[in-house]
Image (tube, rainbow, N blue to C red; front, side, top):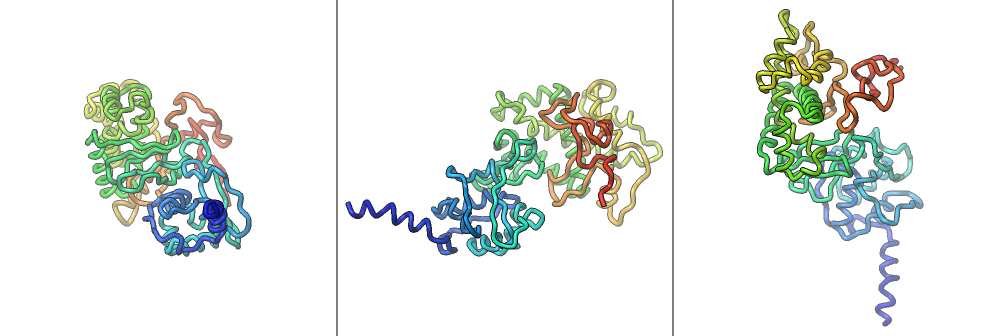
Length: 378
């Protein structure tokens, strides 16, 4: 009896003790782009420690945390520089290692506190805010990646597609080798063109999603892929994935136009005819399937070339202003210049940009932070 009654107080005393590096002997691998909350949860789970106790060890003073615990798919853990130092010490890592892997620990996102401080931030329900569920094959089960506005992307292993919509999901793309081949083609285009190649893929993906929404171009093939992926009841979830092969065909064609459009005889109509023949869809040249491409051609018109010390720099400099150089290299880092939002209506807007009144292509669907009419800040 005495042993039984003393167990709970003993556990309470242990939980009240400050956490030390010796209490976390198992060092989980760092995952590039992971949320801080995800790393903390993986560390706590691997070492049999309570997540709340680990978080409190990084904070100076009292800290109230949810009794149900922190859930990485809904919350992020923000820290001051001093708390990041404490975390590095506990994990046997350097701050530089943690900051390279975890976006939320990089300087712009650190809490502006001189002492060790921790704060919880809920991911908003806005499209593109929630983290991506990480691939369980080459990363770890239960890991989550910072989205930074990127709502989906294939895992580098090519066997899973990771998404952040609807609370996060992972699609097994193994049954469709064409999806893995599309990733290989994407990497090859990036290798040839640098970030300009990734930007063209982003543009092509937007056009392909427009076609998907309107049941155009390769709709029957996309339906078959959705069924193969087991998404007959969640077709919108699978849409960004199943259009990937056609996205790459279109991106290569867009690359050809980018090379042609600075020549004196550049002809958009001829390029559209060639594209229609490539897809075997005549309406791309003169039907409703042409509509999203009309928007793209308005932003990528025939005109003068651009200068640059390397071919990759020249290719980037000739892109329109609504393209922004991605912070990191590799596939699915660039943002498209076409700003319609998948899952929102293509024919109307929920808000009107106060700078261009919703007339510019940057804000025709939703207001954009990079509206060309926005006054320059000093």
